[in-house]
Length: 441
Image (tube, rainbow, N blue to C red; front, side):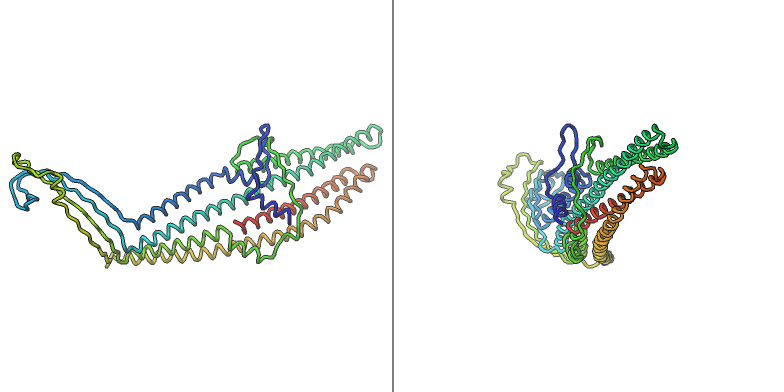
């Protein structure tokens, strides 16, 4: 249990284990997590989405602030016109300027209020979605990393078999030189040696392929020959698994998919309020200050009042309120509300689906861990018998009591038993990490 806790702590807060000396990359599982979070393009893209949602949320806040406008116009009027200062009709040409400053603010607007609620929930949902991407990335990293470790361990078993084949060939060569065996016995051993060599080469390829998959996910380019691993993976611990209710409580409380579904419900609920708000009365307060200046262009000798004096003397102010009550809009508003409610109902169902899926994932991971423990124990018992069988077969083969074919069967049985054991072990590793990730993120 202590080892699994240490591994999980490394997932989040361990120092980066990536160190490059002489152009080599040293990796541990937590180091892979750190590299992936640093380099993954999906996470970088999601950060931009979060920033966009924050900007939209800030924008929605300003809907509650007044809007202020200022304007200046200049007109030339020719022919019969209304003289602005006397309000009489005259046959003169005028130059006029109008200046105004206006401000307006929504006192009551239910649509804007719900728009702010929706945008705030959208920010929280974007943050939760980022955690979803992160947890799925960590889970995939763990799978790929353990795949590399599995292939590395399996390659070690194949190399052991290959070395045993070489040892037997050397022994048979000596025996043949003394006439103790027939050539056919040596040829059988050489054929077995060739099979073992092919298996080693295939194992090397599988390991390199798994490593390339991992490096691709890390968005890191380096020669596979320059990558080394430093994880000392812990032993299978059947006592590390807690009660199922513990994990179910954690997944509902912590899992980002569950949180994202919650925020999506809030978004759709606010959307219903926003659409409804469009059909409700709005009250707007408005203030405006304006003035004007006029100058005759026809009578150039006319004594024209100073610009500043006219602007001051002609200044007017007004304040007012506008109440807008929607009455009929072709029934589109009522249908918009019905559509928004359907989206809200869909979000509620989606939340239930997410909870059901998470519950299934937890229960399946627990079951897979329990199955792996049983498989590991039984494989360990079988391996003990296989090792003893291989030991006695080796002695009989060296004493000439069995032929190369029977010895090869004993070798294959041993390899199969060793493979079953590491299969069970890595199933336990992966599902233990998976269970912790889905209940923590």
